[in-house]
Image 1 (cartoon, rainbow over the protein chains, first blue to last red):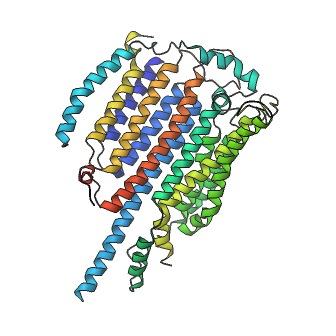
Image 2: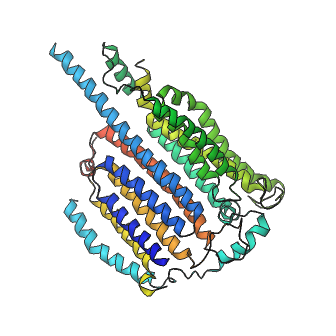
Image 3: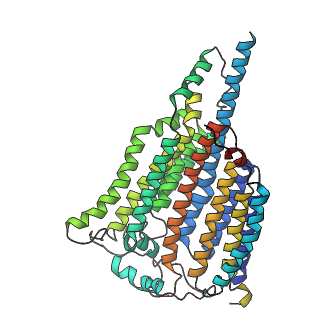
Amino acid sequence: MMYVGAGILILVGISGFAVVRTRDVTAQILALGFYGLITALMFFFFQAPDVALSQITVGAVALPLMVMLAISRMKFRDSARQKSDGKEEGANHE
Amino acid sequence: MSERVRLGIFFIFGPLFLGLYCYAAMGLPQWGHYRGPYGDVISRVAVFERHATDAVNAINYDYRGFDTLGEEFILFTAVLGIMLLLRREEGAADTKADARKQGEKSNEVEDNPALSTTIQAVSLPAVFVTVIFGFYIGLHGQLTPGGGFQAGVILATAPILIYLAQNTKAFKRITSHPVIEVIEAIGAASYGLIGIAPLLLGVPLLTNVLPRGVTGDVFSAGTIALISACVGIEVTAAFLLVAYTYLQEIISGEIAED
Amino acid sequence: MPPHLSLLPFIVAGWLFFCGLYGIITSRHLVHCVVCLAVLQTSTYMLLLGIGYRLGGAAPVFADIFPGTATVDPVVQALMLTDVVVEAVVVALLLAIVVKAYEKSGCIDPKDLSTLRG
């Protein structure tokens, strides 16, 4: 039984490394969600159901959601600025 | 400081710190042999003293309730900071309105595509189940794992499911700004008031003064259930405010197009 | 407890700490930096859990077991609940700062943000 726990711990270490090494932020959201879930599984193994519930709701739902909201807001600003720049150039050309 | 210098410093002092950490970790008790007295004391005593079967929530909201009060105010202050940072600037709004008034069609903002009926058919029962489950987890904090904070986050995902399933108008109508702010403030303030009320009775701050009830009932364990509900209300409103603040530009950009 | 497993949670905690720190140092995108900070914060969970675990212990919920049976440490789990809340809050606030910095300066690389502009 302890070997199952050791396996889950090693899996947590590997997925933490994967989160760090993913350079593209949109792909990092998925890695973060998986990392949150595998950490919650580890909390269940450690007989901590309260903390596991918190980790599922925060680390696998709320945290990727907030990162996604931040990225989408930055992209929205980018596209809005590009459109207004394009319109100014179009107005200048005329 | 260039990146190579930073990496060099990291690879010199990192192993040093790692060595110190390993030396310290060898003095800890082995994994699986918990030695300390406090955990055993709480396990033996919490059910009889507070009539709460969940020892972790009894510690969180009763034995160490003052720490949780500080944590709630951390959440409140951080949401305040986020709303201050990301508020709509008047200049930015005007440039976008001017850009739109120059006879532009609505093809810069991603048009809200008509979502398939499958998504809408699946997500509305999901919202229903989420709300019921959130209330269940929040009300049974003193009996089973769960409690206020987890319930707050679960309930806050229900309007986000609505945002994903339908258009943003419904989301904006649900999270209309002043009511959610007031709810969050009520949640945070009532935790403080529940803590101050025992002072008027002559006992220390945050003492459990309500009747404890029968162990295993939903309405038991005194102030633990009440504090758990207040925390749940505040956390729900806090996360909804954060989501609304991040999405404010995107929502108003799309809605002003209509 | 076999001796080669006795320090595993502490080793994984240290490994996650250094992974997060390495990610922050060599980061080229501000949002990637914030997510690595979140990974760094989760290393403390491993440390706390490693201290509080008891072999053969049950969860500290006494709805169906008698109080006084051997359970794992509930005090450490209460600490971890606060820790999880603070992690979510810190990441939210840092992401707001990142969004604002990107809007004001237009660059997403931490290296380009180093020059002070009047």
